[in-house]
Length: 287
Ligand SMILES: [Mn+2]
Image (cartoon, rainbow, N blue to C red; front, side, top):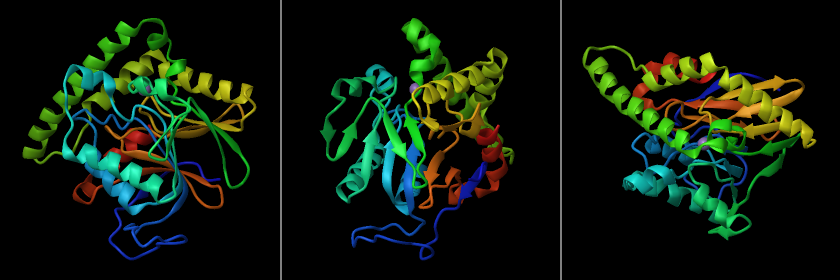
């Protein structure tokens, strides 16, 4: 198994389309056995729906795991924001399920409203509390969003809401700053990623989270875990357990994929228009 970060270039047609091809399948890129994505935060201006659509369009899979915070119910309750591109993402997800892809939705804390529908199926999408994915090479991966390990959210919901507001604020500030930076000819720079990185580094939060999740996966008898929630893509062994975090589609645009031989890989989506920023994106996700 290869550890590390790889890049998915936007497909320019033709190329490596493989295996099952249905006539309605417009995908031109590589097919994966499984794709794991989380923290799309549909319903917020931060969601990079267009990039996600490009990724989804070009990369079909047999399994698609939606590991929480897909729709941001917290933000939508406060302010309705639902552009066409967010609708397109939902349509695309449902279409995949219709086309025979096994789509599994594990709700997170931002879409906890969906936890009321656990055990049900909507348009071919299974809503489950958590899942176990068996890789082609026989490893069992526990699939969970990860917020159950978040002491702050578990103990005091209002604190989490406060944190959410601050996060939204930095994201907005980030957009303005980058507009100015772009005008000055400077490359993209993510303030919220920087702040999150700094703050959480100081609190040692990320490590604690990762160790706790990996430990629980091991306790449950699995070889690894795939989660999201902290918006930090990662794939590494922790005390003999494979810890995978598929990142997010607000900043890092990352996905975890399984190849047909069971090999797992962490991908960063680079849009055609910003391939100059490759280095920046890589360091955010790989940090
Ligand atoms: Mn979350």
